[in-house]
Length: 97
Image 1 (cartoon, one colour):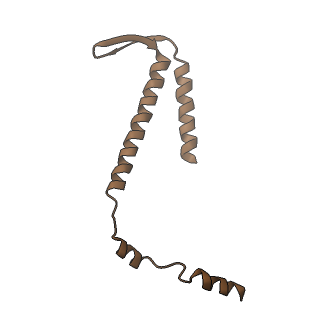
Image 2: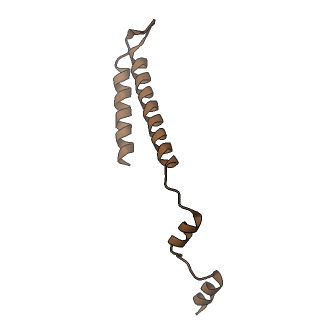
Image 3: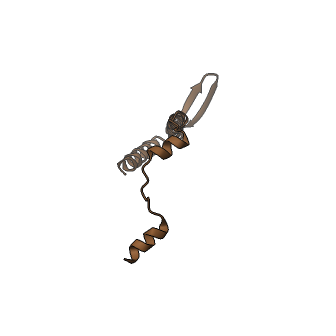
């Protein structure tokens, strides 16, 4: 919940800061040069940062999932204690007592 609150505050601060900078600026990127409102550049940079963060997080989660330890089925069944050893028939008989 705290993460959601912090992300909301940061998003509001970025939006307010971007909207206060509406003047047109010239952006030069390698061989390209164009004019755009500074607010659009700020919002695009913030969205790009969020997208990169999501992709990096997804890649880390996928790597962890791919390298998770896998136990053979027989071993996992033997090592896992049975929570409900009684069958449903005997359970019903015990509940009627």
